[in-house]
Length: 212
Figure 1 (tube, rainbow, N blue to C red):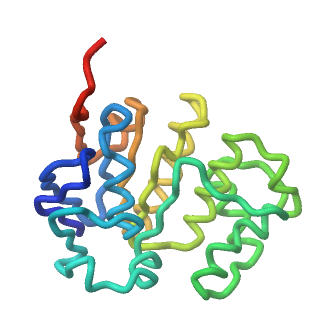
Figure 2: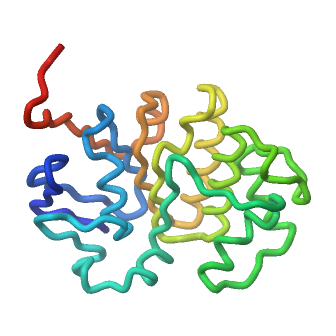
C-alpha cells in the first residue's frame, strides 16, 4: 500500500526502505528519537522527506492532493487535538472537516462502545482524563472510516489491561471494514499481540552525541 524508497530526513532517518501491506496491522517500534512518528507524518504528507520517494498504491505521494490523501489515510497523533464542547461535537468534527454528513447518535454511541468510553454524548470533553481523551480521539477516527489508520502511540495514556482491551476492539472494527493500520507503539504487549507485520527502527546516533 505504502512504499518508501531510499527515504532520508535530515539526521533522523537515512536511506530507509520499507513497505506497508494493505489490510494488515503494522507496528513500528524502537527507541524515542528514532524516527517512528516522522514516518507516520510522511505517510500523511505532514512532512516531506529530504531525499527519496514515497508511493501510495503505486502513485508517487507528491502527485496526490494532500486533502485527498488525508481523507484516505487519517492520522491520530500521540497528543490528540480535542475541541471545546461536548463529546458529540468532538466526534462529529472529523466528519465535518472532511465535508461528510454527520453521523446519527446510534453510530456515535457505537464508536464510544468500541473504545470502552462510558460517557454521554452531551458530556463535556474538557473534563476527560488523558486516557479518555485518547479513546475519544480513536472513536472520532473510527467514525471517519478511512482506508488507512495512522496511529501514533494510541494507547500511551492507558493502563496495560485497558490498552489491550481497547485496541482489540478497535482493530476488530477496522478489520471488519477491510482497513489498514500502521501504528507506532512503545507497548510490547500491543506490538506482540496485534502486529501482523513489525518494523523495529534502530536509533541513529546524532553527530556529537556520546554514550553515557
